[in-house]
Length: 469
Ligand code: 5AD
Ligand code: SF4
Image (cartoon, rainbow, N blue to C red; front, top):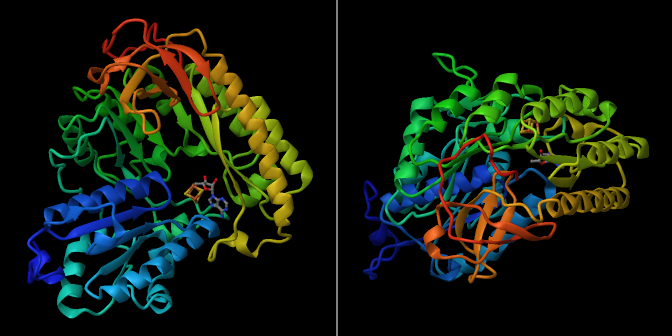
């Protein structure tokens, strides 16, 4: 409970039920992890979670500012909260995440019904700041960088799931010309390995079987830690955790893809053969303008090294179209790189000017209609490649980890291959949380359909003789 005031008394004195918190997450997996962490912090303080905005006593928007469209989504959601606050002045509204960090005090002026603007380094301060607001009722903005990532409270027995995110480092030192992340998440900071492993053990004790290690630049994990530790070391230690069947990680920067990491992935049983390796552009000229720190040829060399060590590795990427100065020839190089590498999947975006970043001042800007056309062309190419790669799995038995019942088709189990492809198939609930080996019988661009010949499940994770994915 809160220090001065009991949470439920402060929110609604004539109600016997606990106060309810509604957390809405925009953006990336790190935000999902942070939202989960805030949910645990709030649960410790007596909050129940609700999915019903109208019944919430506390609304937290965990926001993203990576592109202008993301910020617009947040602002329009925030606008919808105004009448709720007018109806019920005791409602507390918090904006956190990257928009909070980027806009700070300005947000309080734009949305005077907001109670708290909470920066990306201050999530652990949520209880004390709520406490303050409840007694004082004056809006607060806290966006200092603290460079300290305290571990989240332990899970409760209600938190049951098969896969979970675990942030191992945050921030970024790369300052790519287009990217707001170093400004809104601060410099790179890695969590100590012992703390990460303790959190991982807690997740496994609560039924988690797959952990996705997160960092804006996860493969540079360890910089600044004493004693020195690399990301490959962390993977090696995590791979030894009893009960943990799979480990993934994201996002990797091509320039930091070390031979040590490649061999860790090739050798460690639980580490899945999937690398999300954002290339951003296929043109060396544009990569240079973006300050990515590698050329097109460097990127292709890394992919080759990766595939040599790990022939069935699944590769996904991010590409931006319409970076300032991107010509038709530059764009053709992006298309060509995609055709050569044949990524399993791709996230692609139209370049968006971000305040503060260097590229916001770069000229000439590419016309919006040109960006849209390039994006559509790129996505059509990738869709056909993804479909071909997925179709190539028809007739194979692949190792999947079963995550639960499908949302759209609850009669089916939903699962993922080691390469992160979704496979849906009929099977019993007992398989949830287990490894299984369905036969792939149908392929779509976004998922595969499997058939389970028998109820085979759960052999120990292994590298040799592993069915491909
Ligand atoms: N405009 C468009 N896309 C961007 N990304 C990052 N900044 C921008 C921007 N200003 C994309 C990159 C990154 C992904 C998370 O978002 O591709 O890898
Ligand atoms: Fe942004 Fe570049 Fe850092 Fe990725 S590596 S978070 S794109 S600055």
